[in-house]
Image 1 (tube, rainbow, N blue to C red):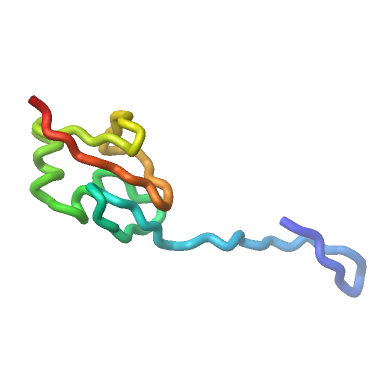
Image 2 (image 1 turned 30 degrees about the horizontal axis):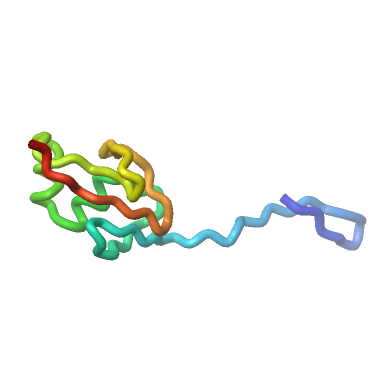
Length: 88
């Protein structure tokens, strides 16, 4: 919220911040365009549906660019980089 000058004095006005509706994430190096608020599972489905199913089956795990495990319900930020790794 911000204050704005009007004829009768000052008045509060709501302003929405400049927020992009879409974000770009990278799955195994490939750029994927998603709506803001989508999760790891959505990025995997957009990249490759069979890969998503492999993660569900426990054949593949998902990590971020720092090597930390990501769950399918994990949130994504613009520019996030995720990688899939086959489990033994």
